[in-house]
Image (tube, rainbow, N blue to C red; front, side, top):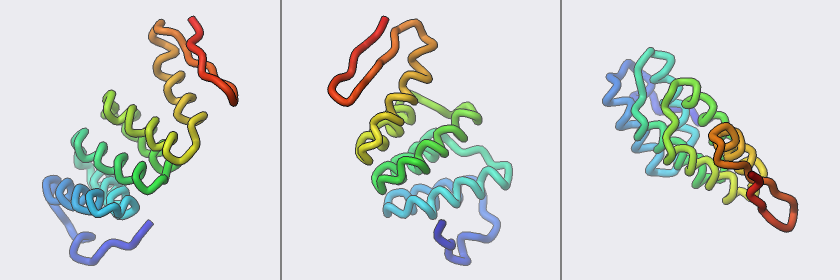
Length: 129
């Protein structure tokens, strides 16, 4: 992860953290945005869904699908997963040509809902009831 400028590594309020995370995410600095988000959590601050989604988006745009999946697991643990965050991660996997990981994530969540599962091989995707 990128080292943060000294002025952002000092004590900040939750709102300042969120603004800095968004600023880095919007500038496509996924590593700095992710680092700040983790600093928020280390300081026992709550991050909004919008803040976590901004970092997920930054990771996805940078094709850092593994970082996206890791962050998704963390926000799932913290109860911050939404349909939007779920979609962001699946799209990130697809953009990085790691569709099987996106499919695994989809099946992990959709498989327990009774709405069927998706199976895939190299040629097709099939919904299995």
